[in-house]
Image 1 (cartoon, rainbow, N blue to C red):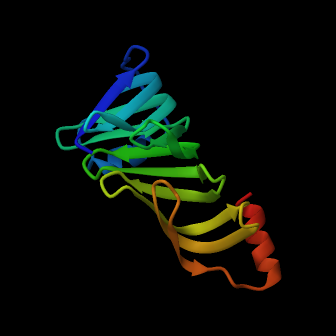
Image 2 (tube, rainbow, N blue to C red):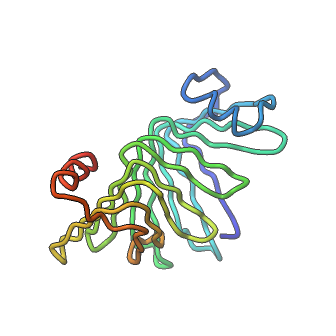
Length: 188
């Protein structure tokens, strides 16, 4: 994606924040940080004049240093992946996320759900969206529900396209029934 456009709905404020500040400071190596806070954020990613991704969040904190900008979404985010006609192809929700600008990745965690236009749904507790390669991946437990096939799959580790129409599990869960049920409950 060649261009990234940031649209902020409300004014930027400089205040303090306690949500995972230590984690963010560790990512930038203890450098002096400047902070911007924005509410009701909408970020548009475009390529060749087509909006391809829309990220929305009630709160974004941008930590800026000389070498790195990091965006924190402490109240979660909603991501919409669009085709060239602006039609939504897939969505991702998480209760918390960090975007590392230098790496071009969003690290989403806490009740992550990815779903597509076929109503397939992925649940996990952590996922990484690689913006440049247009993939999502995780090393964690996953639950994939495919109602059109009448199928539910449990596994560990996954790589998928960001549209969540193609995916590969690193390890399909084949444990005893009790373990399968416990994992399924955890990911509900």
